[in-house]
Length: 135
Image 1 (tube, rainbow, N blue to C red):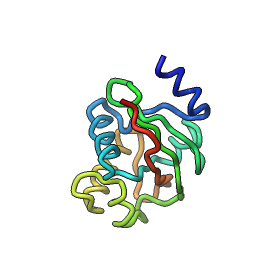
Image 2 (spheres, rainbow, N blue to C red):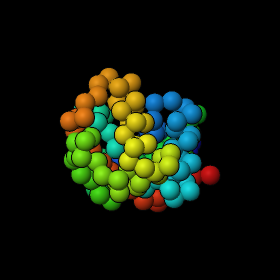
Image 3 (cartoon, one colour):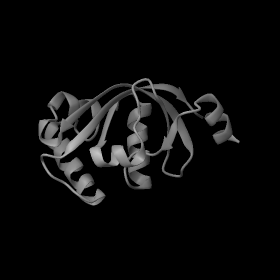
Image 4 (cartoon, rainbow, N blue to C red):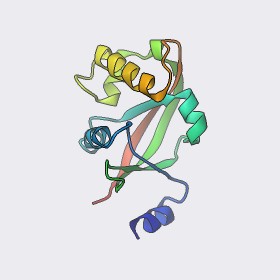
């Protein structure tokens, strides 16, 4: 019932969870809901494989149990190499101590688990705003 409502309210929205585990999904979602995480990134390959979010497009973010938790809207995007991510960009992701060093270590681990890491790899860096918290 909730998903039907969401597809009517946000008809082109993708439903997805952050990260690659239920624990990571919940942890990153909590950062979004507290306003600490206003950006995310994915590998360019994942971006192409999973469908391209567009500026102004909506997403419904799921928690670690696959329940809809909030709706976000993409407000900016840029293509950037992993090695060119700045401290400011890393801080917008809101993770760990918000430092570039933490971002690099955690994202290298993530992209390695995803199937391939290179310092030169292309990323899609997305900034977003929370539109609605779904209780």
